[in-house]
Length: 415
Ligand SMILES: [Zn+2]
Image (cartoon, rainbow, N blue to C red; front, top):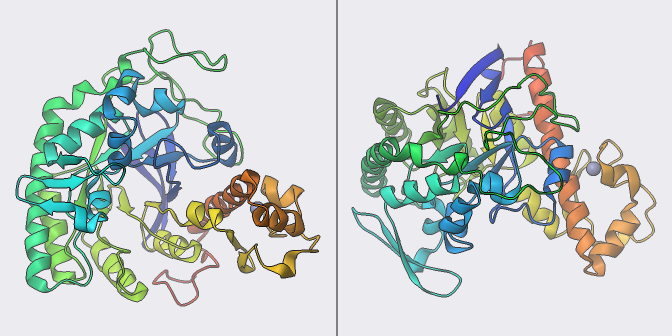
């Protein structure tokens, strides 16, 4: 068994559930912070635990280049390497390679690309992307896909979608033959900071999710036969018919969860929403649905209310490093001079450790002085804001309430 997905409550199309992964239980809908290089930039793992982060995303392309899959595999996979025993998801590398633009060449076999680090030449195929993700050992891994660019003509969108479908079959075939190679049982990783590993050398999912997470009742050792879960990815560009066909044929191949890829690549936001809303209707209700690479706090709340269970985005962490902060009163650019003498909390409605302790004046000073602490505190707040947003959505869906963020962006039935 790789994962189980239980829907606990629903309201219209929105639903609240539990995604039981080999390492931990994840409450859905969930926002997954991006830890590209096995690190959420500037935030240590114990702090992520305190914030209630339930699942992290790692980027296969980056980890493959540095430190390399073998290094991570020898440390027991990402969980052992980065000392994180909650859930992890890795992308397939397809989107990252897609982002290289001039540095890649796509063929039926796979993608030849040049490293953004040193220009060296590499090749990803569905098989090698699976091999890398099995070595990295995330709980959930993604089929290798081609992310269709925007804008693209219909023929191009169809050709690209067909390629993704053939790659999905190859991804699944390779994964099924090699799933047992996941490095969870190695027990070769160091015991860090006095933390004890189970005697079996395998992780036991912890139930001390700390902070304000509501997870409290998943305990017991990890199933020794547990394997990763491979999700399929729906493509088809911005064409609703192609998205429907892609969904149906990806479901035919058969995966324990389905993602919508190829969005947030430059298309207008209302088109993203149209594609998501339409595609969701063609995905099975009893499987987790993952919208990749989206979006603002308003958007993640809206998509959760539409029935999306998982989302990831670099926005809260990347914006934080540029001094752009999300608050209940809108966005704040903390570098502005108007905050120089502002004694107020960054967001008076936010209960995070940054807002409880520091003034806007101090945060502005840190940012203006290029202090490392500015990036840490800004990231902690933005992540808290995103996680709180999803917590509110999880609480509001069973109560049949709107999420409060959804003005004009929802088909969520109002009670
Ligand atoms: Zn805060």
